[in-house]
Amino acid sequence: MNKFRSFCFIVCLIASFLVGAVSRPIVSFAWGDSTPGGKGRQTYTLDDSDLGELDDVITFNSLVAGHNGKSLETGSELNFVSALPADADIHDYWQGNNITVEDGKEYVVRLYVHNNSPKGIAGTSTGTKVAISGIGASKTNAKGKQEVEVNGFIESDNATPKEYWDYVRFYSNTSFHLDYVFGSAMIYNRGATGTTDPISAAEIESKSGDELKALLNSHTVTGKPLGDDIVLKQKADGTLDGQLIGFDALDGNVPGCYEYSSYITIRVKAVFDYEFAAEVKVRKEGGGKDGWKESINAQVGDKVEFCIDYKNMDAKTNDDNKIQNNVTVSDALPSSLKYVLGTAKIYDDSTDGEWITLTSGDNIATHGVDIGCYSGGSNASIAFTAQVVDSDLKYGKNTLVNWGQANVGSTSQAGYAVVIVQKSGYFVITVLSVLLIFCIICSIVLLLKIIKRK
Image (cartoon, rainbow, N blue to C red):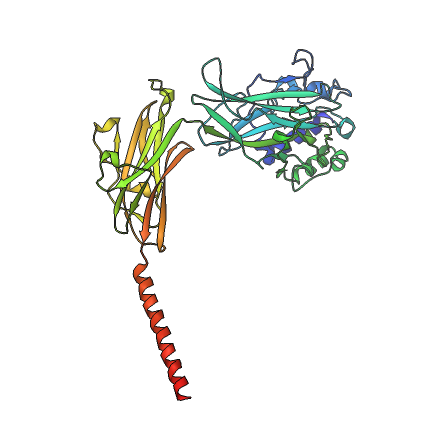
């Protein structure tokens, strides 16, 4: 492709949906390839490409600068893996090196794929696959931080070199893990594999100059699902195999030049591995401190007290990283246990050995209440009163299970306590029995009268 053609495509690319992925340059030095030494592939500029220095070489992501040494819109292609919070504007800065995660937040990991051959269909790579690995539990790095390194790979049967990789690292002061969001893998390009408004490789190959520019501008990149093999499919030896990609089909065939480049994205969710416990107990109202049990018997109209115990299970230390912030406690009462307003109270290190009224405590039975921050080894107890009511009790034994839980970030721990209620039906049964006997006697008397008349 000539210089003008490459320029036109970049302009079109910036004007399309894909411009969100083609934002400011990515700063990273985490690239590598399968050449001896791991970073030995030849790199090029757009000027080199225009001068024919790639010749018949099929290579991926090896452009490092534009014309006259200017930066590429994509940044150096050596750094082709990046990430961004899923709720961020796609025009924001894509992090190519380090991302500090937030608990419960989703992130988009993006992989850029560009066959640098300037020969279009004649420079098609075959057997082209992509894979993303490393999603999982954090490890402690040399600086004492928790880290997950997510790696992106490109592989091709006829490219030189055959394999390319780059990574992005996720960090936190708290132990965490990344969960892959199943079904989130997408591919974006101008072909049938990457948009609902595709252009065929043959159409692109038949145009040049203004005609090519008009063709590219007349179509929109929407993206299409790619499948979970990108993170799941393995080879016989247990190593990650990855997902075939392509332009006209997911057949591994990727023509050369910008017009056929792709972005692949997945989503991951950061989940902090907080260590804490929650336990629920119950007693009759006014029971002593030794009256707390896992299960009690009660009758309709009785009042019972529940206690939710939370404890930060990290070792007792002054380390700020062990503090669990914004701990929330909530309770899901069954329909025959009614929360008594104003009864929620708390006991912890800050209450001077006394139970005190819990601020906003009435929220405990709805969406929960924030009880504050707790360092390693500390704990809190939250108690409240509920009354047994006959909401949907059946005759006989009723087992009312009350679930309480503590939440730290997106992590929850739950427990339960049981109230057993006997609903007596003896009076009703007795009345029905008497009526039945009376009806039988009446029927017999009537029958005897009829027989006597005959």
